Amino acid sequence: MAERGESSEAVMLKKTEEEKLRKGKMIVGDESKAGYEEEGKKVKLVTSDGVTMEVEISIVKEMEIIQTFIGATDTDDSFIFPISNVSSHILNQIIELVKGEYDQELAKKLSHDELKEILVAANYLNMKTLFHFIATAIANVIQNKSVEFVRDFFGIVNDFTEEEEAELRKTNAWAFEGVDED
Amino acid sequence: MSSTQNSCVLPENMLMEILSWLPLKEVVQLRCVSKVRNHLVSDPAFVKLHFQRSPKNTHILLTFVDTADDGAQDRNYAVICPIQDLLDNPSSTLETLHRNNRPFNRSYTVLGVCNGLVCLQDSSTEEVFSEYWFRIWNPAIRAMSKDSPHIRFRNSDYKDVSWFRSAVAGVMCGEDEGAA
Image (cartoon, rainbow over all chains, first blue to last red; front, side, top):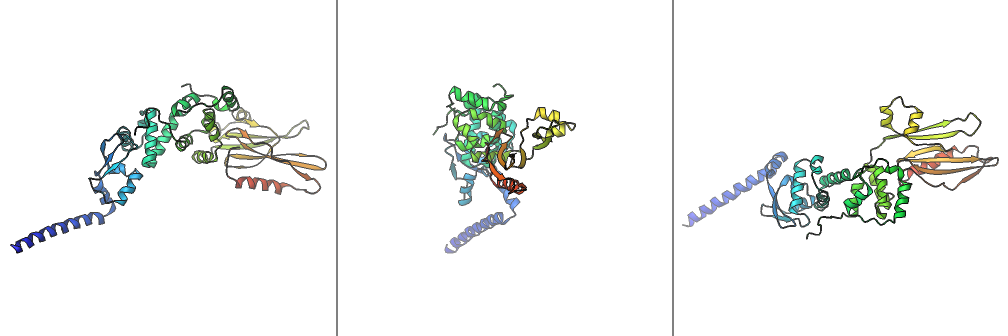
């Protein structure tokens, strides 16, 4: 009996040893292969509205705020990251933009509020490429628009008196040649 | 949790980021949006960011002297011209350049150009004394600084003041760019 027990234990040991070896190979193996094996792996993110979303690792890699966690801890599939400042709707938009390789045509389909919320989210998640992309997309929206449009877009209150504004417009009149009406 | 409803207000650093991607003409328009926006145009941090993002070497500064026939003082002209305009219209003449690009025709001499700013010098020479003064011109936002204090030389003391002019141009180029 004792002998049998020993042998089954030995088999178990052998198994874990083999597993370790396999894992070791994966880690030691060349970089490109490791990247390939990682592809398809997903990370669970919980959004501000309490939705758990599985996001591909290639997209999560752009979120530096989460990367620092992944780098620091030995993550497994059960690990869940809360992103309390980003709604599931906005996270979905972000995923579309990253998958679409930052195409300005995709940005044109977003509403003004979505654009602004994505910018805030990109800043929070520390997604540098997305942040620049959305900032330029917003710049495109407000380009050639009137002062009133820009106030409205950013929710800025006009704190000039009528006289002050008229004076400013007069001194900078050259800049107002050829502005589109909204 | 849902602090940002339909009207999401962006923090200042994000506004600065967005506006830094706009052409300068539009940034100048936005001075009228609010008092904070008005100050932004001359905020050194914003000026620097915008300058970094702006395409470089897009314009050329052409200077020429109009020699007066009737014995009046010669006039110096400076025309800021988009290089693309010259490429598109290789047969441009001073006449057509004048029309499209605002020339200035004071008696200034251009001492140097740095980061889009132009250092100009004006002078008046009388029998005993000569006076020199300077201005910084930012053609992109059409701003001109006030006259610098006048510097006075006794003509007999200084036969050649070209060293002085190059020193002034050197000081200017050593400085960081900023709105005039």
